[in-house]
Length: 135
Image 1 (tube, rainbow, N blue to C red):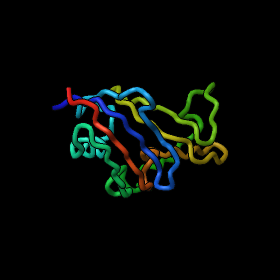
Image 2 (image 1 turned 90 degrees about the vertical axis):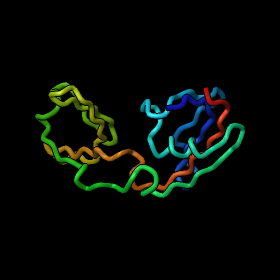
Image 3 (image 1 turned 45 degrees about the horizontal axis):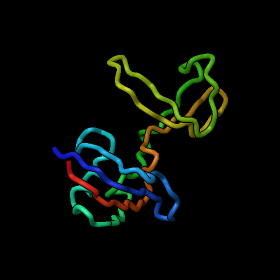
Image 4 (image 1 turned 60 degrees about the horizontal axis):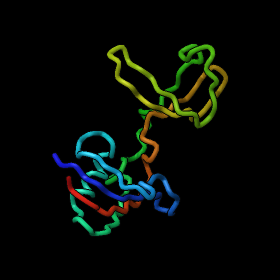
């Protein structure tokens, strides 16, 4: 598929930093799951040694917020010793051992609203990438 060594910076449209490679290059292989496919497609468009900035709308990036991905669960559906806090990330396992990550959006008594949308859903982002090397 293609292995890459890159420097990158991902920001919200307002400039708030979301993630970056920092001062060390980031290595990944297309399709290995380390980068979202929308960011991988940007990397594939860039050339070695070129600094490129991609402005991605919500549709082109991480998608729009899907109201169906926000689930209301009962307190009893969570481990009794788990402290539930707003904005806390939670991982759920299915019977087939798949993992799903969600974020607590609302706590209303015994009703816990968990958002399973990507954290950047509904947001425009800027992805700056410099390809150091294609391995």
